[in-house]
Image 1: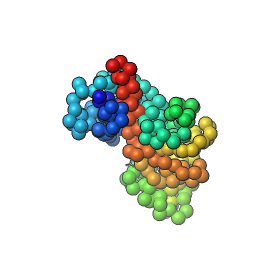
Image 2: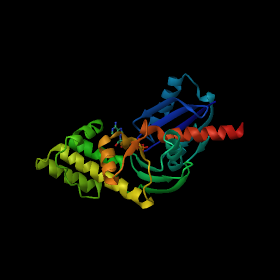
Image 3: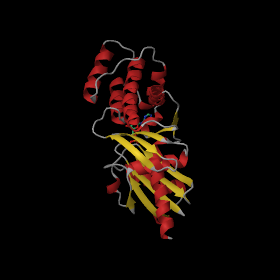
Image 4: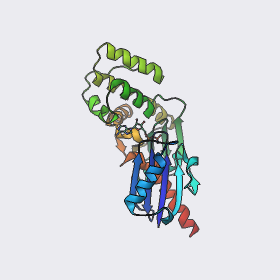
Length: 260
Ligand code: ADP
């Protein structure tokens, strides 16, 4: 039996096709999200990679910020539930999840059966989210995928003290014009994101294992900064951008099984 999870995010679109609730047969990411052609392209790519048709899907669940725009979905489920489901499937020892996406950041506490005990979310402000890093990457003229490498060469991380993305952008421009090395500015930017994410996580109390997901988890500089701040190891979920879509595909499997 095949099921599909579609995660229509603010920054990217993700589709996972699952066989019998166990095996991932396709996991596609398109780096544009809701309101774009991203969801359709991710879906078409996943079907063509797996050699399957939409009709082969027993059930389809959509999640993410733009989940209600998905025409193909039989049901919509929140990202909190879907990330929890996807992460627990991949890392059953996970008890604290930190998810940093395009326009929000979340800390989720799990019980030992994978249920959501508590969650805390920042979706009011771009600081501490992927958007903050996107803005800084543009100002610094460093690709997102290169930010971690720059950070690893930092000798004296700069302080990025503004809690507002617009002011922080001015702060970074000012540091650049004073000749502060990009490596040190980037390390400061990563610390700023880490301290906001950890602030959310502290609110629910931290329990090991701590697992990170969301697009920003691909930035090892942010992962290192979070691990340092929390004083404990942080596990990065395999393919961290697709965990919400995976959770949605797992829920779809549960639904399909219930009905059959
Ligand atoms: P959403 O689910 O809200 O659409 P994602 O979880 O896909 O968001 O995360 C999007 C963010 O991930 C982007 O804003 C960007 O900062 C970050 N990102 C995407 N790709 C990379 C990469 N290769 N390296 C580092 N960061 C990345």
